[in-house]
Length: 80
Image (tube, rainbow, N blue to C red; front, side, top):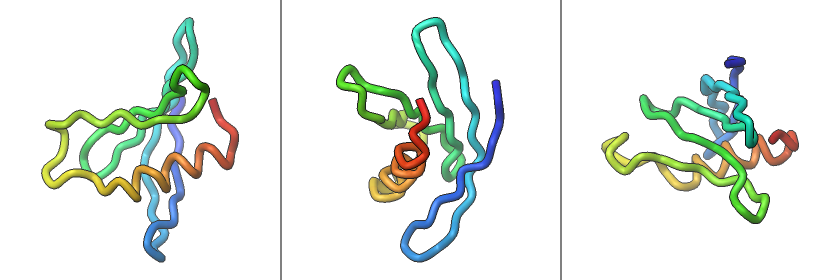
């Protein structure tokens, strides 16, 4: 897996998250560590990026806006 850093601006703060790219025979998935939990980013059936977060992974939950900001970074870079 290739590792990288994901720079995100959220609520006026510059944040940096660790990420990994995993390749599969059917496509790619991005794994981003956010607040101690792993967020999986992949394409859905319509080709849009989506995030998958385990319901039991964090307490409190990761803010939806933060996940949207991370997805926007990947969308702007046109990855996957």
